[in-house]
Image (cartoon, rainbow, N blue to C red; front, side, top):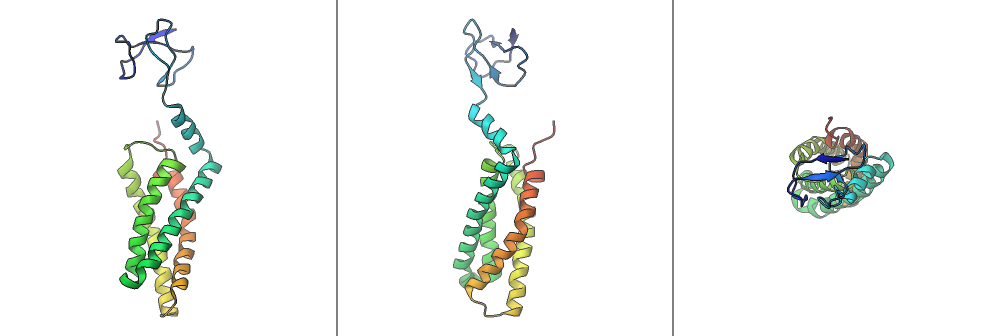
Length: 186
């Protein structure tokens, strides 16, 4: 079956004529025509596999957890380094912003298989809304601890921030899966 396809940069034949497998309506899925008019082009098979795997809940949860551990270590490490110089609340805010931006980028690409610049600003803006929840929880934990134990050692402060992070993690995963990186409805 030969159909007229739009000319693309990867179609060496000026007419754009390609042969498609019967019933193959996938965009970008082409077979070489019997006349050699087009070459094999499967919209980057690695991307197709990654997109299929990204949609599976168990794979998403595993990748999210891995990124979450790295992000939490970054957040807590930066907090531990900065809180003496900046104060607890400012150190928490700076560390959390840095960890959130990296977490969003990593989850966008690896957990949810989103590529390219489309939606990038929207994804980060929505992540900032989830960031607000995490920041509120970690700030509240530090404020409560500051009243209960004004001279708490660094390890206790870090533990309080970590505990608040655990609470916000479930909300963050659901928000990323259902709102932030939700595929556009066709």
